[in-house]
Image 1 (spheres, each protein chain N blue to C red):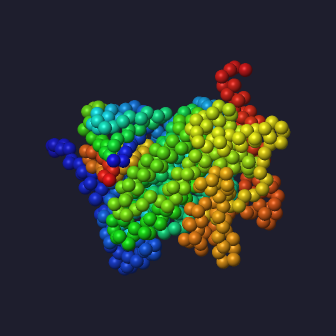
Image 2 (image 1 turned 45 degrees about the vertical axis):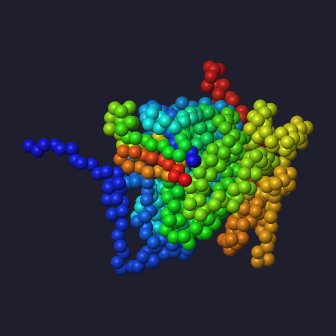
Length: 506
Length: 89
């Protein structure tokens, strides 16, 4: 009889080598340039793909095992949430607006990232890179799916969730993230890695999934915390991939430095603009708040981003060009964005509202140098108009930034009382910009950005011809249900009625 | 020196891991937030497989950390026995 002897297990590094690196092969009937046609045109010089290290050393077998465990945990909680009327446990129905924006603006971005990584896994020649991109492509699809599944439970009860895919394509506030991902997906493979791996994963997802999800927990939203943290458990791997990609490019050849720096400048600013949405959700749409957007940005943007740039200084990398302008915008951006959302609330598939006295007290405590001086008076004016029966709505159409596609609603970096607006003439056409950062991005690649599709312009074109009702139909917005002030909305009434039913026998 | 950090979902799987990290890294500072626990440290943070095994009473694969991991900061180096986060500059 044979003795059972415990087989010697492979060490992590050895296993990674066998299950990853050894999968690569040398093409024989095509040359490498034909097999990987897009890897050189960006100008990045690579001498040795073997130097690409995945520090997690995750192999496919372990990947499936741990991802399956995450999925089982996730769906167990989602079932419990649905079975126990979890939607009635949230602190306040105002919070639903943050979820609607998440579903319309962010979840489709996860899907785009999945498409992008599937492509990059094909286009990068290094095997370590291919495997990491493959895993991330699957992760991103999973994130889009789990978010849609989790939020579909809210769609059974509340307005504004039903047409998130149309909103993603056509809604004016969704074009901010949509254009970010379209820009990344139409870039070369290395730039894509900076856009998603560095800007989106390293800087943005920390802000999106960590304090925001912790905030969701504070607001009793079990479903969102669950998809948020489940997604974020993959993000640690994604950030590491982005960081490794930057290091790899810089270590491979000194000529790569100016190219990488230019991408860091560009994608930091694009990411910062995208954060305007997340910051506004954090400061205004969470009824109970863990921390302000400014505080979160100090930890995850300034401190954590600063640590990265300090570390990359040895390669000659300096902090991104827009860093100082971002610093100046910190105390203004979310207030300006919420005011913009409020004044165009007839055209949003979520509700906005005038902050309560208590909310304003919190905002002035968190933004002591700006809120009382610049923003409280505006909210109070808007409140007076509403009480007088003449609620404020901006029926005009702001100029749209050709780069980030958001209406030009932000102010000059050094003067919070003047709207920031830049113009560039290119081939006889005038293009508008919200900031120096977005103008510079355009000027470096004008032929790319003149092709941008700005869906809001459709309102003045045939067949809509300026008809607001026809535009609402075109963006799948149910007027009087999905849009407008939270106060008096169907969501507010239903939530109150159902919650009362849940706590009484009447 | 810049700060490295690691955050986990606050649950029973994470508790012994967090205990092990705090015991092994005297510079580590615990930051408890709703539904999550974050550990910050100046420069470097080392997670040791053995310390976690002592607490969970079974063999532990450091890749299991990924199930409840929320985020990290710093350069990562992982092998069978340690999971290290560090800013070297």
